[in-house]
Length: 103
Image 1 (cartoon, rainbow, N blue to C red):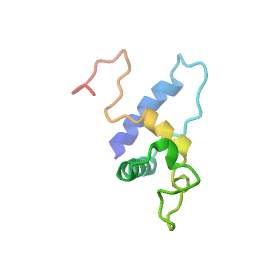
Image 2: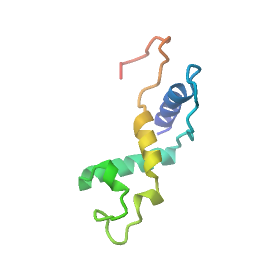
Image 3: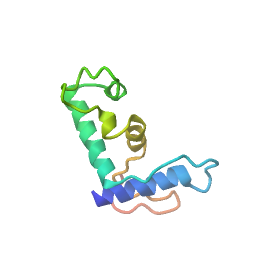
Image 4: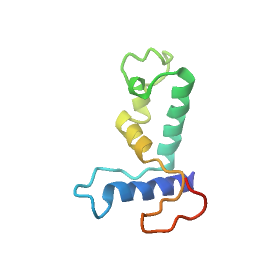
């Protein structure tokens, strides 16, 4: 999990905070806990067949009555940020030669 966190942080920093970026987006560095929650929600979405945009709706028809809403664990905006910036392979800047297998 540590490598996924490091790769995602590196990619996010380059995409959001690079020198050519005019405006820095607010980005809180991803943690292992964030990624575990993100993966849990991804798996749950697949199992129940609900699209991500409906998962955070207040009607909660897809949750058991005892379940906490997903936002209690990971908010929709944070989930979407991680979806956008999740990176499995080490990020190489465009000027670096890729190492290992292409991703």
